[in-house]
Length: 198
Image (cartoon, rainbow, N blue to C red; front, side, top):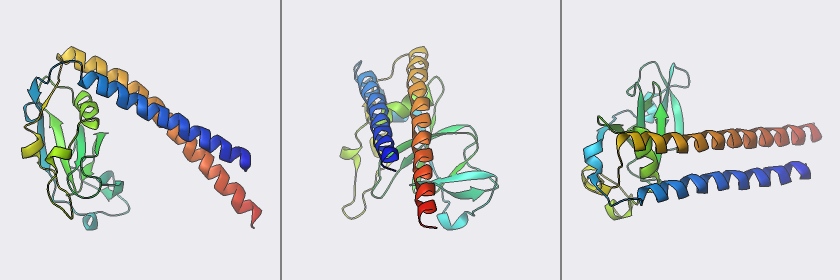
C-alpha cells in the first residue's frame, strides 16, 4: 500500500507537469503577437435552458454541467464541437472542449467558432485568458459574453491556429493517459484496502 501511495504521489506530479506545460505553451502562444481580434469576432455564443433536473441517469448522449457530466439525454444541443464555459458560480470562467453529440445545462455558455477559426485553438487561448475584469456580482459571480466578447486576443492565420491546436491537443491526449493511470492506481488501492477488511 505504501508503494502504491508513492506511485500515486508521483503520478499526481506527472499530471501537474503536463497541465503546467499546456498552460505555459498556451500563454506563450497567446502573447506571441499583439491582440488583433475581438473574441466575439471569432466565436459565437449560445445558452441552454436545460436544468440538471431535466436529465436522467441513462440515455444516449451525455449532458455537461459545471462539474462535468451530470446525466444523459436522448437528444443533444451540440452536434460537432464546442467550448463550454461556466458563466456563474465558483468555477466561473472555467472552459472545457467537447467533441461529438452532447448537451450543456444552463450554467454553461456554448461557444462555437466562426468560419476560418479553429475552435480548439481558441479553447487553449481561453484557458489562459483572464476573465477577472469581466466578473460581475458579489455573492454569485457572473460573466457575460457581451462583456468579455469585446476583449481582444492574439489570433494568427488559420493554418497557424491548426498547427498550435494539434500540438497542444497531442499533449492533452498524453495528459488524459496519465490521468487514467492515476484512476487505475486509486482503484487498485481501494481494492487492496477492501480485501484487508473483509
